Image (cartoon, rainbow, N blue to C red; front, side):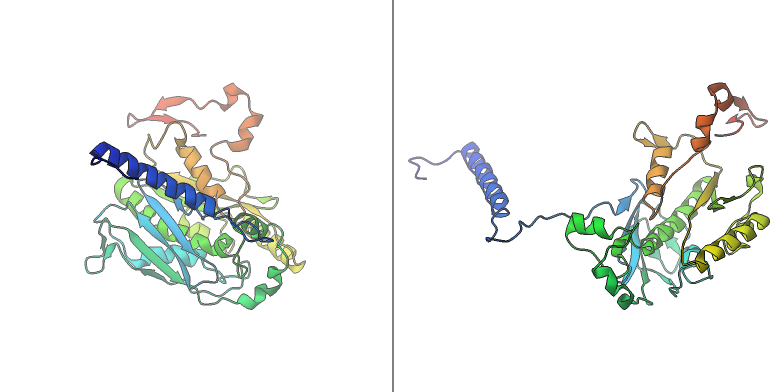
Length: 330
């Protein structure tokens, strides 16, 4: 427009804002312009690849891409860290280690790309990037998947949401995504051990209806007990029955599910925050985001619904060291 007098600063600011709004409206309108007979394009960006706040992991990579990995942000400086503890955990997750797992043969060798001083072997307090390269991809095995959705998989969901999917291996919905979680968890384990003496141990508690005895002493379980069986059940007799059941199902060309139990020791009081960031809520989100997870229990879990309140209540007491404790921690 023509002005008989110079614009004031406020007028220039108002015009600039109006121009930006007009450009934004034009861009939004242009997204709706489509050629005759063409479907309207919609942009949907993938989110949800990160977990945590103060200590945050972001996993990345596809099953049949160049590799998978994780970026860990929020790790304190001067924490002793090398590839060794990370590789130990990845070796436990690695496919092809027994007849009970997927036959895909991967070494899953981790590379720490940043965030660790190689000379001193301690963290720098900066983001830690870790990479595991894919080497045994057989993409041709998935040719039929381009034409038919697999039941109980995320193929149809990805197509519905993004209009495209990684046919070979399932992309981000593959269990290989958990490599980043395991690597990030290995770093978290070192931090928790250093600062709080926290120990975390998990094992297979049930396979289909084959379960560990209810009176099994869970406080006595060690990592060696868990690793002694290929099914990673610390109760030897139950472990053998689990293996027999899995072999029986496999011979019929089928598969079955199970239950993993996790115990954390020496956890300090006061973790989590009200109301949506309770520790139980965070743990539930982390576990339920794992592929094929269908249920989450903590403490008494679903069994607590079978008890009356007075039976379920967990009374406080003061132990010999003067600490306030609960008797069952359920």
